[in-house]
Length: 429
Image (cartoon, helix red, strand yellow):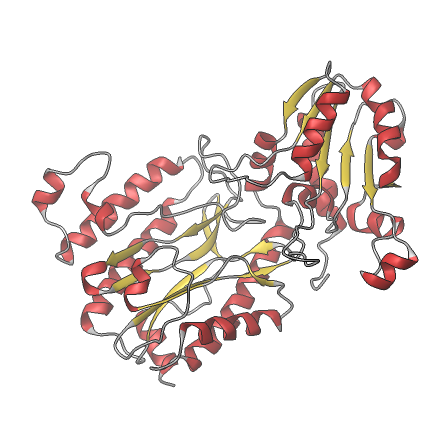
């Protein structure tokens, strides 16, 4: 691993949460992700299944975690099954986790090799009445590729058809959306890496640089700080490209007078950061650019205070929409008549601010969480309003990551330059 492992105590706490919600005679099974092929004999970089990681800290392929609190034998209450290493694997791939290393990372005392799984599972399945299985139930999911969890569900239901099956996903969404202190500090560290790289970008950008050059510098700066890489594909969008919400080509020249929208974030220890800043290619905003920038900034500052315990995200988004409506009126982009005649299902402000203001963030950039339940203290969100004026070739989005507290919020990016005057001063230092 490139990163410093999180403390074992985190995973012990996380499994305790699961045990509290499992009914009698129930067990839960988590599978790692696959190493996916690319072409020929190549493979994609491995990225662990976040639910398995959250429960165990094991960041290795071909791993299984079983939690069965009511198992007859104590050695079956919590079990890890790992790929057994060999001299050949060590030569070609590098050494895999030993049983002792897995115990140290996870706090799971009972570690077995993967080839023992089916025999042991046969024993505990005879005792269990309910089997909780995992699946990707993210609201934006798109699963064209079958995962190890998918294959295991089919195998399990085929070989044990008379058991009662339940979903782990709702519980995992509830657990993972409220961050423990160890997670928050890891996310803060990821945000610090993003901050340091962004400061390097401010000194680098000038007319004539290519969006790709900026992306390359960002990737270099975060990786030399022990990040595995970007938490998502960076958006380096200059000029009119900033009006394309998911612009990722990053291949155009940055021209004098334009603004660059940088939606960038480093990952650290599998936890994401997600930041957006807008900077002027020439080092100074025009008066119009600064007016739009400051309008977005005002919405962002107010929106951060509105994410508080007890609030529903849908209600929050409607309130932010009213803030944006006022700013767009002030900028002359919409009129009172536009508001009076608007479609309630697509308000007038949506012409210039068409996306949501916030999403959960954590092990995933768009992390799991339940939109049908109120916000709780400890939840982590982005706050990212934006105004996109295609006819002017100008897009402004500003984004920070925050932790909701009982008495306010903790801005994990509060030390990253945000004010327009501060951006200009740093670019002209």
